[in-house]
Length: 257
Image 1 (cartoon, rainbow, N blue to C red):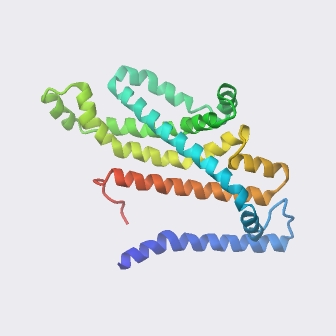
Image 2 (image 1 turned 120 degrees about the vertical axis):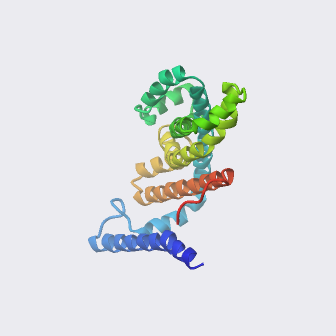
Image 3 (image 1 turned 45 degrees about the vertical axis):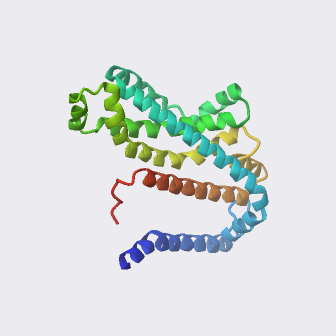
């Protein structure tokens, strides 16, 4: 019980105190320097703006969260499917895997205008952009987990007459579940940001649209409200994915405390 209290203090109370100290320094510094709000508003003003804009922010938050969740789900499915295909043939893996890695050198923001031209201004291009951002961490983690499977387990299935697909089904895929979910955790940290970037370029709703409108009006306080919301949504999405991963892999040992 005492160790649990210490763990809570280390993971929750200590970071919260650091944030409060930083906010206090920010508040005092802005007021002491007499900075105008369009340069850097005080945290108290950002909070007031967030409260005042709360009814307006609701639909924007819902849009961004929907795009992120749909894109993350699509990216996970595509990443796992590609990993399965690559694991079936060494020749295919050696040919396709480097090409998929090369695609990651292209910033997704560069692809956004093309997706808008091909799919319009609706939900589809944003979901696709998030999926393009999310699939690669899942792919890499799943391919690595499949490659690290104990050969003795594969040999047992093969010795019993199991085909390559049966080896994949009964050995490699189950062993790859923790790795795939680990890749999903990483991808979850990018999903909200990718959705916001997509909304910058084309969209009628979402936090990216809200930021763009605030930028045109030099409303730095509103921009900072959106930044805080992006951080909170990213954290909540990560916690949700982490909880899902823990529920899906009850045999995995807990992280060291």
